[in-house]
Image 1: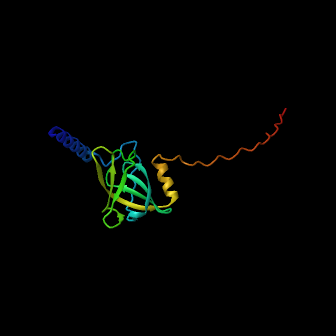
Image 2 (image 1 turned 120 degrees about the vertical axis):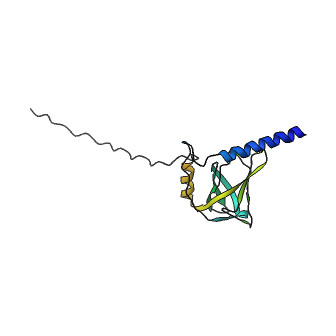
Length: 158
């Protein structure tokens, strides 16, 4: 029993240390951080769906067509593959920087992370974010059709 408890403590300590050691600067392959001082709030009971953009960015869909870009204060490893995600709200509304997300990866139990910003976005902005984070292919304009034009005749001079 003591050995199992010691192992859990060691694993938990390593997870905390690795989370603290995570750099705020992105690596070369990471997209630029989104500068957003969003202060919108989401009704906790109206949340219907979410899309994970990366380890610290989400798009949350509220009842109807309202969408929000949610940025977390730090990265959550495994968030992209995590399907068990919840919100911890103090007053029935999810607001930054007071409230948190709860991500359960099935390993050491749920992880709580504070929300850095919430910004309401429209459908076009949501599509742009999905393209930026590689979840959607950019829409290209179709090239103009080439017209069949007969070449001009050339006269040779003597």
